[in-house]
Image (cartoon, rainbow, N blue to C red; front, side, top):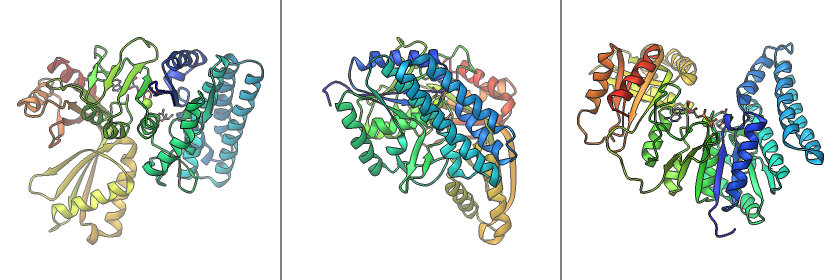
Amino acid sequence: MTGAATRIMKFGGTSLGSAARIFGACQIIVRGKQDGPVVVVVSAMGETTDVLVRAAHAATHGGGVGWPSLAASLESEHLLCGRSLTSGQEAEQLRLTLLKHGKTLRDFCEGISLRGMVSAQELDAISSLGELMAADLVAAALRAQGLAAEPVDAARLIVTDDHFGQAAPLLAQSQEEIRSTLRPMLADGIIPVVTGFRSRTVEGQCTTLGRGGSDYTATILGSLLPADEIWIWTDVDGVMTADPRLVPHAHLIPELSYREALELAFFGAKVLHPNSMELPHRYGVPVRIRNTMAPDGEGTTIAPGVRNAPGVRAIAHTSDARLFTVGGSDGVSFTRVATSVLGVLDDERVPTLMVTQSSADNVFCFAVDGQHGQRMGDHLERIRAVDLNASGLGSIEETPQVGIVVVVGEAMRGTPGIAARLFGALAERQINVVAISQGSSELSVSAAVGAADIKEAVMAIHQEFAL
Ligand code: ADP
Ligand code: ASP
Ligand code: MG
């Protein structure tokens, strides 16, 4: 490898949403390559992953209803894009590769429609086909601009456990694969264009790192290669004081500590995958979040030694959480109820957004992201029904459509009155608070409100803390 800094550059779905956007991303890569080796990580184009998931589910209904047209439109969209980014021999090679991925999708869907069901394993292989197509497109587009670039399937690089849909990387094996594959390519001046989101089990089955997982791919590669910096190129200027879709006047945060970024990602600031900050934090690799549409902006830097700014730094929110209030049967202790519930959460690998204990009762209350809500509810009912005595579970109450708003700031610790101001701002607007919780590290304070109130709650808190 050269002495120049090595960078990971990850591009999200919106940043690759059309031929013009892919061309823009390539310009950024071309410029980046002038400063040193670059490893590119790509998400699927635009909404491709959603469409692939929809096709797989449509296929379960049998009879070929729905999925063939979804597959055809994805294929033609990618082919069209390929035609406008390449020419000659390159274009023909790309066309054949994209058609091969289209055929893979059709083969999977035909099999699923015959069986009437899709396995978690198949869903991973299907939902990550968009990343394979995007890597082929971007590598071909870079070659068309005279750079040496090769697509790399991250299933070759990232080895995980077999928790399909939400796999966890096995670091030692992954490090070996990452180094032995990427280092020689970089030494030869080649730009590896790596598929985000995809990974594989030790046995070689395709897994994925969870929705939004390409950020995680970028930070796994950047931490284990290691790279000097990880740049996440997205559709906003960086990490903002709140989701700009909710608070249009939210502003850019130039610097964040790892712990603040970890907390924001965990509590739903979609700009970063929930697990993406752990490894850069552990290995001290700087992460920058930048805007593909305004590439000259400085973005947000998350790096060792970032000075803490005082008070609340940013607000994260989830508008689709589900709250569970689980009571123990008579005479069962709180700890037993909590153990049963936490066991289910652990088995299912579902993170809790909030946990509270209800007074002296044996009532355990927790919130999870809506995408896991149904599954959690079904599991809790099942263990209560199957083994009432062993689980100790009595009543299970579910409150769907809950919003959670979280204020985050490392230097909030020891600052009195933050919770009071948060709840004061909500009370002033007559927003009912369903549950509250504060991390013992005092890095965050959370309030659960009705989902319909979330926008007003975030706006009110943003104003209260003058962010
Ligand atoms: P990508 O496709 O690049 O991975 P995502 O849609 O996953 O992009 O993430 C970017 C989006 O995250 C933004 O468009 C924005 O709406 C949302 N977002 C939520 N919270 C924040 C925040 N605090 N700062 C910036 N963006 C945020
Ligand atoms: N394409 C995947 C998704 O939509 C991964 C990602 O975009 O990061 O979830
Ligand atoms: Mg994302």
